[in-house]
Length: 359
Image (tube, rainbow, N blue to C red; front, side):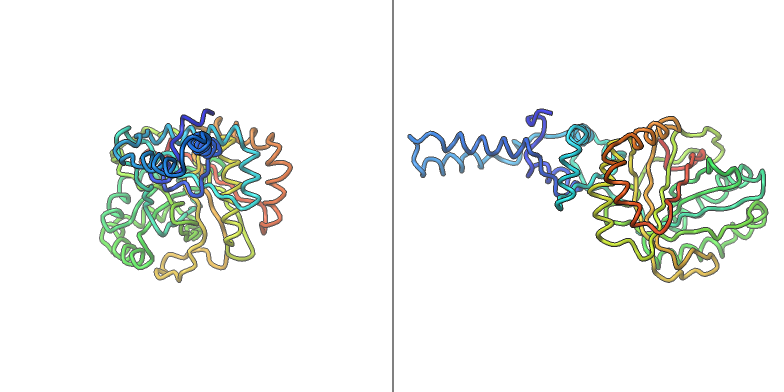
């Protein structure tokens, strides 16, 4: 890709601070070429060279180009795709590159770029085992009765899903600004009149609702992107597009800083290269569960990352591409598996009508 398509490193970091440690070879080469051109003509004195540099550096901020952020990220990913082995080498020697979630970068050309805002510092991944044939009954009740009342007390209802590999499992995500806020919000909802009026109908569909992971973003910018999109009406039956895949890695101890770097610098780049859109990554929140009426899984150490695909065939193409990838097969996968306590868990999830996460 032509280096002229990208801004200088300094400008790029100003306009997209989420992408850490990004160094573009073409940009550096251009800067070196300009420097050599300025200094190569021996007719100019050292003072003249300094004056020329000062004049060149005097361009105002207003003269800097404006960028369409999604286009910039697409070019970055295109560059990455064509130079993946170089980036894997960079990762091996300590380089760094982290992508923001792409769905948070669709802004207009002249809109100032800001750091992606994440919705929640604490997230619950809730998996309910239901009585046979009761999943759609619970989903209908949930959509009509339980979303707005939770959000009214400060709970962010992030997404609701059907598990594609278990017809009797309902999976949903909700988030909170912090652990104290979680405590107060849960008290307000579950001790309120609306839950008391509907809990019998909800509980009648459920065999087990204790399979809950309490999570926090693995990095400050790796949570789910905040959304201001209006939710569809409570009586909507239109199923949105998309397949959300949750991948769970289990460890003997909390996920280390070394593993988080490995994910950001190596795993994430490989997954993106083969077609995944990563929308969040999380580790356990090991704080005390201050609302014990709702148990959570304790004594476990997990790393969970979520990816979004247009549909099930798109996910299958991603899986096939990953398995054919020589770097994944020969280097990355063998480096990953020994770190894990057991085989990764995979949840293939389709959004329900009112889920805020969908394609």
